[in-house]
Image 1 (cartoon, rainbow, N blue to C red):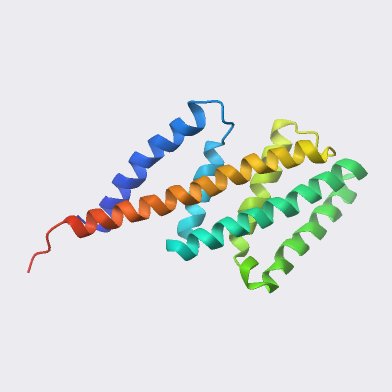
Image 2 (tube, rainbow, N blue to C red):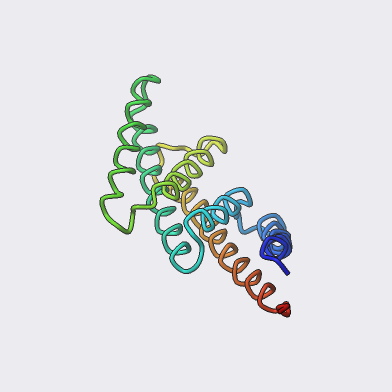
Length: 168
């Protein structure tokens, strides 16, 4: 079996399981964030390195977003003030890439954007650090679970490709 077909099967089957896991119980996992994490796993190169890079940088992005949201929620103010605070937080987000472990900027942006979107679109009291932190933790859990689904889908697809007899 070729790799694309194997990936289609492994990702499709696991996508059904992931959707059930997020929607079929009360864990609060977010299926959209799981899929972002899954894509990020592949975007960062896959394998153990992609899993590690993606997960660590999701956490970094969510942490920076959480601090930014709490500051914005506490300070309040105009669109201009909010825009400056967000801009400053994104500067911090990207400057983190000076540390090799935080150098996968796209994965950090996925963590930041997912956290901000979830908090803002669900009405989380962003000035409340406990509420914002709890929301960020749920997003991070969903993103990292997506990274793990990516890892498993890659392994399953690899096994399907190798299982096919090779023609001479």
